[in-house]
Image 1: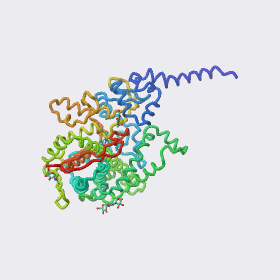
Image 2: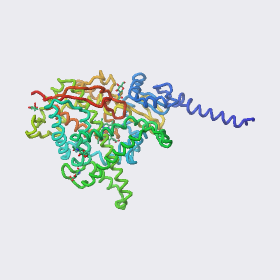
Image 3: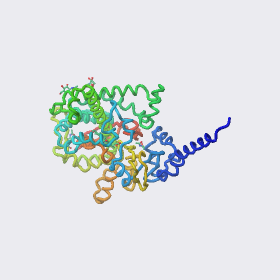
Image 4: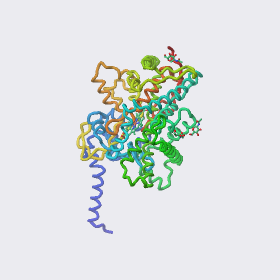
Length: 527
Ligand code: HEM
Ligand SMILES: *[C@@H]1O[C@H](CO)[C@@H](O)[C@H](O)[C@H]1NC(C)=O
Ligand SMILES: *[C@@H]1O[C@H](CO)[C@@H](O)[C@H](O)[C@H]1NC(C)=O
Ligand SMILES: *[C@@H]1O[C@H](CO)[C@@H](O)[C@H](O)[C@H]1NC(C)=O
Ligand SMILES: CC(=O)N[C@H]1CO[C@H](CO)[C@@H](O)[C@@H]1O
């Protein structure tokens, strides 16, 4: 059979076009081709970086590539990574590059998106305007609700547990307790103290819920990086993600929705300990924007209920896991340094009143000093900052997309639009020029005021809460609760390590120690 010359020419052209599009252009002609490749195959295929992520080697591989190749590297045909401030995180994150689809894929819930997962800047800023005020430092520091929440959680729940541990000389898994502490804090601010969680005092419930929450982690990769594969597998009934994972989601969604519905009953309250501060704020802000005829529309009401639930669920998860991990690493580092514990305690005793906790439960419990005075303690501040540097709870990539028509990053111009670009705190925080001996935990590096320029540079590279318009909205809440917890503990107790096997971070979006525990012994501090 003779093949027509027209067909042959067409076929040849088609092959050429494919070769041009998938090989010649990405390897030689695209402006991205000048950027050093983290792997030889990066310009033509994303398979290498997908494999790296599937094997949970994202952080170390990208980190090693930056060490080898400099502040900008190419990870795939349309993905790069940056590791610098100027023409790096400053351009991308402070410059408002939009979030990548990665976020709604992984962290969407209730069929909708939250402030954290919205990609489009307009809807995002509208949502952020509704919520940022109640998370501002000044509001949190002067909030009467926060004062009641703090007193209940620290004085009535946490300290008695630690006193019991010191009296009976029983070791405590602090990582487990930290997650209860932070969940109680954030849920109380979201939903009101009465209707928030009481994880600290309910071990079995806490452990069941946290186990469900954590169990899904190994399967994050699929939604994050290969969403089409997930859809296909579902369609073909291949169990890529096990059924118990879906079941865990169902239980957790119902739990989150239940907390919201309880808060709804108290939405009119401004009673201390009852008012659901964040829930109420969001509900009122959403109602204000809504057309009045929608108020009686059942479909619209249900949509609004789920939208609020999605936002609240996000704050619950973003709020408890990160702060708990930070506290765990802080207690770990501080438990290795008895001298620093002593110095810290001296500083804490300058608080008025100091958080002195009685040895016996029959003595009146302490009043807490103001959040503002705790915030002003330099050693405490340095300990927290250094922990967030060395053990950033979100150390990995925060993907964004480059804007139209092009941008310049790390000296490379004409970077095309819609290129995925990431930075990772893990690497930014390990620049030896900015943080000498980056692998050692040295709180005092933040207290060296002899060189203000150097200190300023450290602050520019500090990225535990991200930066720009999508920076963490809960950073002030996190810092306030962490500082209070650490201050309350080290005023009267010392800690030593009983067991710290596998404290290395897992490779994930929000990390945790691989061993998932940190066992400490609490003792009364000597005068
Ligand atoms: C030590 C504790 C915390 C750390 C290290 C942390 C870290 C971060 C980081 C790095 C981001 C940016 C993520 C990205 O763009 O991929 C972020 C965003 C966010 N965080 Fe936190 N966070 C902490 C505590 C909290 C708390 C307590 C809340 C509770 C309200 C919270 C709520 C959020 C929300 C809602 C966003 C999305 C903000 C936006 O897109 O505008 N975080 N956090
Ligand atoms: C722990 O929480 C569960 C679920 O809310 C509840 O049913 C149980 O009674 C609680 N246990 C204690 C000891 O408070
Ligand atoms: C707690 O610390 C304060 C200040 O050092 C001390 O006066 C008090 O006796 C301590 N309480 C106990 C039970 O050791
Ligand atoms: C990052 O990689 C290093 C090895 O380079 C490893 O020790 C560490 O646990 C990893 N951290 C995370 C968050 O994956
Ligand atoms: C489940 C629960 O604790 N619900 C409480 C929510 O707050 C209201 C108002 O204080 C209480 O009456 C409920 O018992």
